[in-house]
Amino acid sequence: MKKGFTLIEILIVIAIIGILATIVLVSLNGARKKANIVKAQVEIRQIYNGISMLNLDSDEWLAHKEPEEVEPGASGNEICGDGCAYSLGDDEVGLLNNDSSDPYDNWDGPYINTIIDPWGNEYFFDTDYNYNQHMGLPGDKWVVVVGSYGPDGAGLNEYNADDIIYIVAE
Image (tube, rainbow, N blue to C red; front, side, top):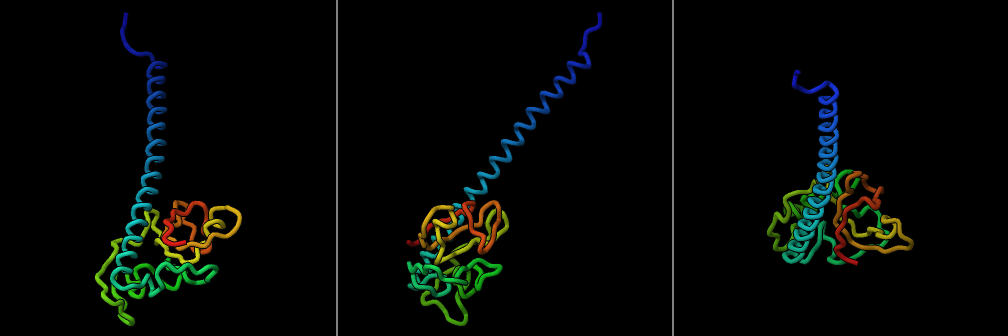
């Protein structure tokens, strides 16, 4: 009598290995998405800390804005790269370089080391972010935020509940 595996037994083993591999890959993909969200949250907090250090040194916020000032309903005040007046990396903003045309007093930067989120989009700073509207809630709640457009990468004027934000001032 011959000892060995039948073709059916081998196919069953291959199918089980395939199912287990699929489960592992799905779990890995979910973990990668969560890791990117956590990375964005950490980097947003670092940008906020950079804004705070700029404020401590110069008594100003990014692009020479008044600290803690919420600008309800303002338009075109976002600092976000493409489609905005400024990018977080621009000299006028003050995070990476001192403003050459209107220097910040006591500038001691650079204050941050990244302006790009894990999905390849620039982080944003907005002094008129309508929290309720963008999160699908009723009414208006205007706040100042530092954020990322999140995994969906929606851009300017496409804020949504996918955004990852840190509220700086209310």
